[in-house]
Length: 462
Image (cartoon, rainbow, N blue to C red; front, side, top):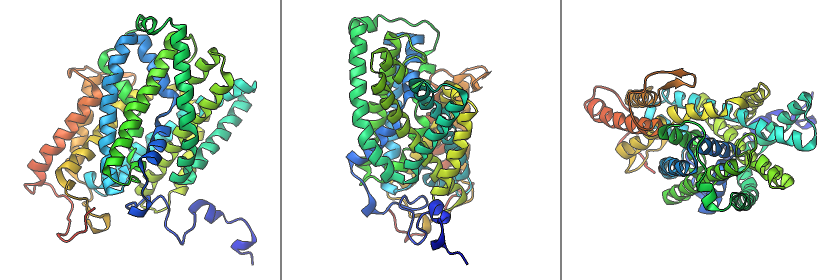
């Protein structure tokens, strides 16, 4: 009779070493002796935010509003995004938990399944949207532009993006140490060349918008570029040594790093007539740096997409309460590759707009809930008797989404409604969700009208 030693061990490939815990702890607090420092965590989070789609968004906003107005929207949007993500990172570093595990505290054991679907589902979609962004330029560069070759490249890049997520935090860390310095150097060089082509900074500032875009929509797009991934930054920030390291790593990546990418796209889009506007590879081709551009693009997309795969794998682990992430990496990536082959990349900007409305309220509730209930210490999950659905969190999320929709005037892209609420959808949604959760906690939970979790008095807190 054949044994595992007689052939390839598929079970080991899919599940890892079953006699040892998953080294990424998808269903548990990260132990203190597995924590990382600021350099390691910043490298991984910067690898996450260094994404060509952010450059497209920067070019799109600049073309619609003009360069000076774009700068204002960029600053406001990234202050919101950076502050929001930094707080989430600090909370997750204290707890040592992923976003979806933090959602158990805010929404209940079954209520958190919505967070799994929302966050995991959007990241599967993101994986599919982004693979063609490297496959198409690779095909163009190599002169392999037939449909069959493009499909083959989508499959190849999708599998490669899966591999570093498959090996977890350590795999993504090693790739980020190579990619991040290279991308910073290339980005600075490209911006310098573009400013020279534009006749200096004054020439850039003179650029006027050719389309119509409200300031609020522009800020929503800025926030939406990475609000979904930012809400899942705790998946990596939980490895931080302490809350301070988590906070600063989140701020560095999502305020400084994301602003750098957004600005790079706006500058490239303002100076060079390329399609898509501001595209990293096409701008570098226009600057005579085609080979450098392709390498930069490969690293740019890879470091984002492996994070997306990792994010939907830990969401899958929580959803099915299965303590191994690898099966969800594999299945999610295969679905993402299928979406890429079906042409999902055409939906990037509508996707960003949608994420900017429906993701921020969820993260805002996690932040508000921590400040309300767990500021003195988060009880270990094994000691908490989680209620099935924590209705204060669920109702607060619905209020936040409603306010965001009434601000944006859009339920989903293409379905418009009246927009009676002024301001920015992302910010309004977060404020409304947090406020509703605070009111619900004091008015409904503290009075006993709605149930919450049961935490024994002698529970160990982190």
